[in-house]
Amino acid sequence: MLVLEELRWGMELDLRITRKTVQQEVVDKLRQAILSGTFAPGHRLVEAELCEALGVSRSSLREALRGLQAEHLIEIIPNRGPHIPVLTWEDAEEIYEVRELLEGEAAMRCASRMSDDDIVELEVRLEAFHRAARDENPDDLAGTAAAFYEIILSRCGNKIINQVLAGLLARISYLRKRSMSLPGRAIKSYEEMRAIYEAIADRNARDARKVAMKHVANARAAAKQTFPV
Amino acid sequence: MLVLEELRWGMELDLRITRKTVQQEVVDKLRQAILSGTFAPGHRLVEAELCEALGVSRSSLREALRGLQAEHLIEIIPNRGPHIPVLTWEDAEEIYEVRELLEGEAAMRCASRMSDDDIVELEVRLEAFHRAARDENPDDLAGTAAAFYEIILSRCGNKIINQVLAGLLARISYLRKRSMSLPGRAIKSYEEMRAIYEAIADRNARDARKVAMKHVANARAAAKQTFPV
DNA sequence: GTCAATCAGATTGACAGACAATATTACCTA
DNA sequence: TAGGTAATATTGTCTGTCAATCTGATTGAC
Image (tube, rainbow over all chains, first blue to last red; front, side):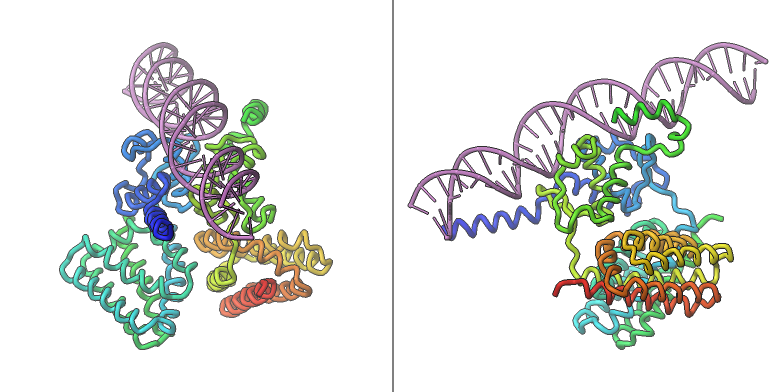
């Protein structure tokens, strides 16, 4: 009997991890597609097409779309349907301003509370980004950079900062990818990230905030360059 | 909804501007209900009941719920449905920390960019809150306080700050209302808000940030008191 | 040729109903 | 009383339907 109980537990656990509702899978798939730039800004998403492509019913799709709308990943105009929002530079700039505040805060907190093991891991990820930047490997740039930030945001001791920033970063993913491909920007970015790492490793909270804010400010300047007048 | 259809006949012009989908109205109604504390934390929202109460179909309701979920106003557990989240003190504290950053920033920006007319309006709203606080009128406290903040957030020159803060404030509305009712807290709160007003009126950006951050810190301390051990 | 009005097709908003999968409750037995 | 089982409630998902609205093209007048 006990064995059976344990088996049942085990199976339920497995299933509970894998068990996703159709709606959740649709959200994940669409989010990934949007973040990876599959849809150009302004692109209209037609329900029937998405249903066909994803193999789900309209109900499930529409529920997923409402979620993405609340995340600001898509806009939905009544009777016209959803589309990928076109970001104005004004909007992007405001997002960078908030990023500056929150990422500065996160870095500062990491300087005083990150474990030594985490700092080692941080350098590992930093150097992974370095390789991608040095080898001009644009496919790996976004992923390795995200891995670097991920550890900072997840260790800053405030889940809300992480949550809010994730939402903001999603809205400018297109812009970030484009600006990271500017000649020299990746390697410059590496140097700034190295400065963040070193301030954290030195446990220097004030510097960590300063260089992290400076990093975002530079990223903003780079992004502005990619904007047509 | 049939009622809506009939109404549109009579006021076609009016509604063409304000035209809202059923789904949007459901989101608004539910959001208001949640913010006003109609549902206690932990309360389960049953689809059938809400459909009945709101007079809408399950499709419309479920789409609305997905939106509220993305706003963190409700949580939805697969196969168990939506419920009002129970906020832990840890979560609330992290929200207050981010509020401190963002509201400080907003106040600072207002000090340098608010118009003289806006400053007059700010004092008007400040005194409206004063009356509610002095007269121990708990029904007006939340509304007048919100009106005071509203003008600061909408004039700070950054819509994202406003957006993010609105999301965060929604998640602790219950807590705020409770702590505002602590004996003496409302009047103390007024004094802090007056300090914010004066710093902005003096065009003193540094002070505006400082007192605004202090105000949030005090609000956090008051909120903590209302938390059971 | 340009502009406006009109019309057909495409698309969305909303509803109802159905059914299986899952969770919750009530009940029963040992 | 504890533990298991059956009955009920609730959710997840799909299908089909219909009206309202938007889009694009055609037509007609000037």
